[in-house]
Image (cartoon, rainbow, N blue to C red; front, side, top):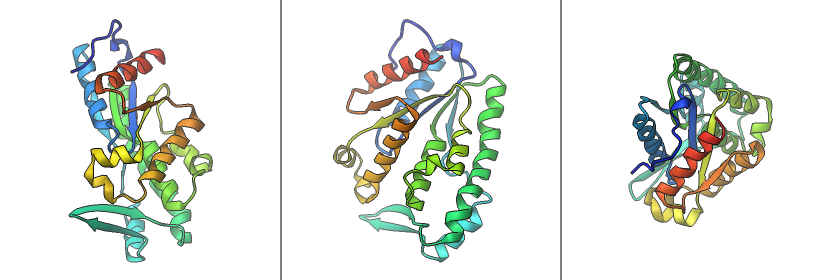
Length: 225
């Protein structure tokens, strides 16, 4: 159920709310609650999931698969995909830039154009997710400080309301059995935490109740409006 708030978020029409974090931290639940909250205020928001906008990137990913640098591991019927581009100069050098071009094109059509039309967007996958994936694939925890990483961050709309959800590894694996096969889960969590610390982003623990996290997400949106 969506928590009622004394102040509405109706005045945030045309805003961009970005809720992210590792799988299992409750992003989809919180995004759904925010969508319901906006609708309760008479605003029809758009829901955005934009993690892998592959187009020009596809030939490089085919090359990675052929080289054995992109693969799936399966256990108990659950597949988990991995990238490891550290041994390929071509992928280390080109893929971040080509993915940036794809991400820019997707952002223009799916983020900036709707915002210009006055739409409100609730997003649960976007540039932070791409940055964490790339930082792991490149073995570079400081990727977001490098030039391509900084340009990814510039795809965030001005005034974006960003919240990172977090939880400890053991609890995540208890919540989601499919996460037991992700051997990089701890590194993914650390990647989001590093972004939050460096960019001074709010972090909410999913140990709180769903309604409490929702209340704090809405407060964050209102406080930064």
